[in-house]
Image 1 (tube, helix red, strand yellow):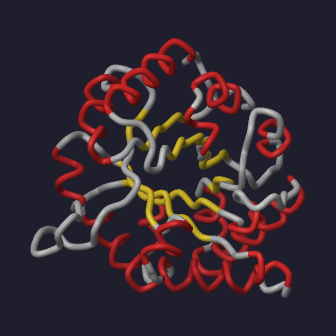
Image 2 (cartoon, rainbow, N blue to C red):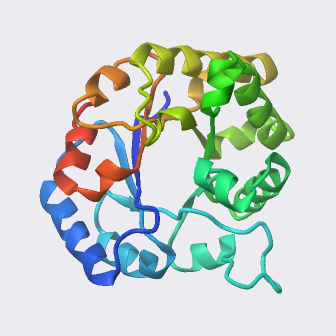
Image 3 (cartoon, rainbow, N blue to C red):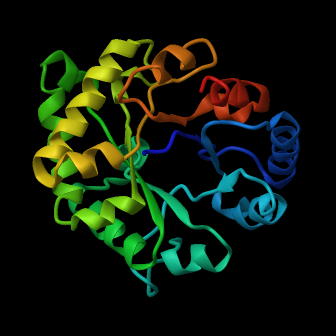
Length: 249
């Protein structure tokens, strides 16, 4: 049975004191849930966040990592480094990493490989831009991103992979994806997985929605049969809003 997951991506927000304050608020708001709850602070605060939450059900995860184990990669962090401070899950392929840092399907395939070799779980992000949606090319774009980065893997690797669909056109643009549009794409993603790996694998993989989920729309989005949770941006920076989304399950 696949898991419900709500992951908060804090992006480049919150210094150490702000991180500690938000975690205090999260612990206060935290309650029994039918979903796994994760937060992804910035690199400088991962260790402190992990130490503060290591006895809590909230998992601390990383926003990114490099594909190399070590070497002359100034400013980068490896999977082994993350694991050494207790981090076991990493977000890869976020739309902002693709847009601002030119991450490609090929480089992301190498990152996925590195994470899996180090026995880490991956939240793998993908999704179409507005021009793709307007040209009705969203299925082709998403299918290509998934196949190019993941379809070299054996079926058993998907025990460690969570998918996160990000309609880039619905993030901070004023455009809004409907719950039905989210469901249609998630169903297409599961069908794409099934055609390659079979229905057992496809039905076991959690697929998160990452398109401006808020307390007001979370329940309707999460009620869709192929939506297994959310990758939350701005709303995850407010403990009350974040747990209102978690409580949608």
